[in-house]
Image 1: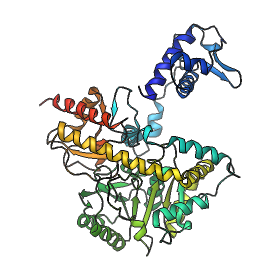
Image 2: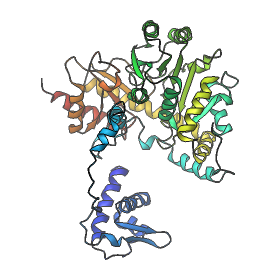
Image 3: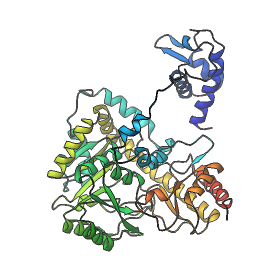
Image 4: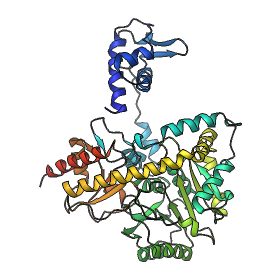
Length: 485
C-alpha cells in the first residue's frame, strides 16, 4: 500500500472514532495511534492534518489533538455546510472583456498536475514519483537553511548572489559566457516561462513554438495574449528549414524550444541544427527561449549531453535560457533561473519584480544547501539509474503489449510519444484507459494547431515502480482493445 492510500485509510478510520467522542475529547497520542493501526508516524501526522483541515479536530501544541466542538452531531467525514451563494451570473459580463475563459487555457496544465486515485497507475504526471526524490536531503537542506544568518531577511530581487553564481556555472560552465550578473532567480520553470513570454513579446504578437510541444508552453503563450505558431519537430529536433520560413512569414521575435529531450517527443537537437537555430534567430533579430527542463533527468546509459544553446551564445545574447530544479528535486522546490544579457535581462527583471517581488529567501538558501551537499550528485546518479530501469521496463512492455506504437526514444527525460493508428481518438482512449486503471495523456493538447496524427504521451517517472509501469501498459492495452472499431 502506498503512503497516499495509507493516509486516506487511516483518516477514514479516525473519522469513525472521532464521531463517538464527546466535544473536546482528547484523541489518543500519536504513539498510541502508530501502535494501534500499525502505520508510520508520518502517516498518523498526515491523517490528523486531513481531519484538522476538515474541521473535525483541533490540534493544541503541547496538549494534544481534540474533537472540535462545532462538529458534534454532524455525520462522519462531513464539513460545515457552505453558505448558499448569491447570484453570480453578473461575473460573466464583467469577465467577458477578457480574451477568453482561462480555465480552457489552463486545462492541460491542470491535467498534468492531476493526482489519480490510489488504484490508478500514473503514467501522466510530469513529476517523478516521491520515491525517486531526495526527501532526506531536502529536509536536511531546509533545516540548515533556516539556521543560516539572515535566512529570513529580504533577499535581493534578482536572487542570492551565491545561487546565481551556481546557476551561471552549471549552465554555461566555469569561465563560460554566462556570469552571475546574467542570472535571475525565478519561482520554478513555469513561472520563468511566464516571465519570459510577458517580457519578450508584445500582446497579440506571434511566438514560434515547436510542434508538438509541452502543453504548458502553449498555455503560457496564450495566457499572455500571444499567438503560438507551430514549427514541426522530427527525430533531430526542430525543422530548421521550416523555422526560417516561419520567421520570414510571421516576423516573430521569439522562438520557444526544448533542445534536450523535448517534451513530448524526447528529441535532441542535432549538432547541425544547433548552429542553424542560432544563425536563423540572429538573422531574424529574434530571441530563443531555451527551456532546459530535462538537463538533470539523464539516464545512466545516456551518451555525453550537448551543451545548452546558451553556452554557445557568446556574441549578442540571442538565447534566454531557463533552468529549474523541481523535476529532479521536488515539485515544492520551486526555484529556477533565467539567464539573459542586456535590455532583455532588464525587461525580465522588471516583469518579475512587478509580478512577485522576489523568490522567498528560505527556498533559495535551501537550494544552496541542497546543491552543495555531496549527496546531491549521488542522488542524480541514482535517479539516472532508476529512470533507465523504468524506461527499459516501459519500452519492453510496449513492444510486448502494443507493438508498433513506439518508434524511437532517447535515454533521457521521462516520457514516450506513441503514434496511434489513424482514426483512433486519443481523447477517447485516454478516458477508456482511466476507466481501466491507468492515467495517460492525449496528444492533442501538445499541438498549437490541428495535429497531423493521433498520439499519446506516457510518463514512466510518475508511477511507483517499474512493475507498475508495466502493469499500466497492460491496462492501456485492455483499454485500446475495448475501443469501438
